[in-house]
Image 1 (spheres, chains in turn orange, yellow, cyan, red):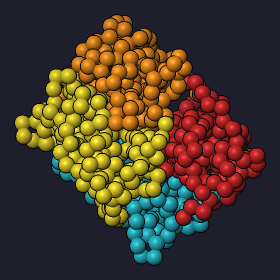
Image 2 (cartoon, one colour):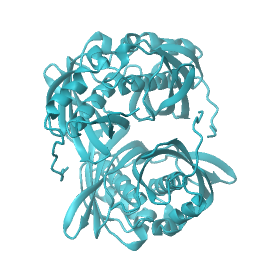
Image 3 (cartoon, chains in turn red, cyan, brown, blue):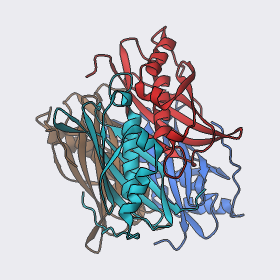
Image 4 (cartoon, chains in turn cyan, red, yellow, green):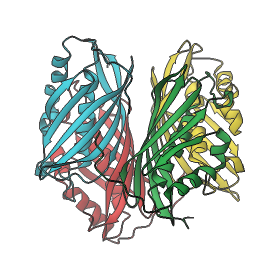
Length: 151
Length: 151
Length: 151
Length: 151
């Protein structure tokens, strides 16, 4: 896939912003998600898989993969907005390509389309088992860019 | 919408099965989701909203709504399968219709299409604030019906 | 599903507008889609199934069902916008619930969420064979409301 | 994105099969879609944009882009199935990233996950205007692999 747009930050302190999206979200702390890196239009997160993340068949719950895909997408999109804007997920679709098992998860989110009011982001979630990494889920997330006074 | 199919259980102990899908999922216990009721092709769950469920703008995190929508769909679909089968989410789309705020969430999941290998389920998530309930999210979930020896 | 919002038209001549969305779209004429009825936040269309609509297994092509679901959603959403606005589909998901066969198709589109910049619409496509109507596809469409000078 | 699987054909005459999926679909002929190339797990199609493909704002109708994305995905998936199997779209999601205008469209479809019963395919639709090609839509398609006696 060719990405034709050049992505430019509207906020010179965009990295600080991405960290805020991360650090101020209690559910993200509760799950244990970590921000690995961030740049313009892109973010990478990781999660150490624990017993508490599982569903009834001993795979990582789709809700954990979804949270990771959605929040990492929000960070990738959040790197592109102005200081007085916020991003909110309006919809996403996720494909759970294979059961997630192993020691850890890694999510890469990349902006596909940077619009004024809508940002579209692809998130890829990989699971590492015994040193081997496999794509386990892929999501496409639509973020709305709204004023920070959104209510 | 008219649902033309009559839904019949392949497992006479389907209620027990739905409870297992619920009780044996550590992530569901961790989040605090409760099974309110279940019948053939349908399930209802609830969640008391706590600080730990929030994202950075003080709304319930999309990942919480997604987990609820996905897992309740799995319960609705799980009521229809044979004892030696399991349901696994293969994909879903969720629309986050308005920010989720308030005291509690309720999710209703209803099977839209009961196929031999694929079950399609609609999940509606409502948020209650000061006694008033509003639709906050809606998901459509595709479940694969697979043998329990699935690996 | 309970729809909590009351939908109000911003355009007193909204019916004329819906007819324009219909009559001015060459692909819709080419396919043979007909507008059956329209009201605030809702539209119904129909299609006589012909040989030319088929795919390689002699079912109606998913592209025909998609066009119908998308365009009828646009009509439902188009009933709600101001005279100087247009609606554009930004994304949708469609579930093809069973192969579409028979004499005719009917599509009902209903607005699920009427936002200032985004309108979410559900479309249900039914196929009639020998007088019996079955749900064959269901789509959820996100429409962006933009100024008519959109380029 | 890394694609970890090696894709192998189950049908030595897979190219012939892809051509059949193409040539035997009346709606595809009617629209004017052309098969440019096909290989294992991948297909490329093209369309000369004509007046009849337009919607009411003079962009290519989302239904045309959807048909192209869905059918090209079916060809990519169809290259992987056995002679006695067929692929049917069970659901897809499409993002309409920017209005499609110009002289021609090109669609690239690539299998993301090749399962025994479900094949997941990504389709990218590009529009060329005055020699410059831009990504205009992206779809993710779930195909069911079923016996050819499917009814």
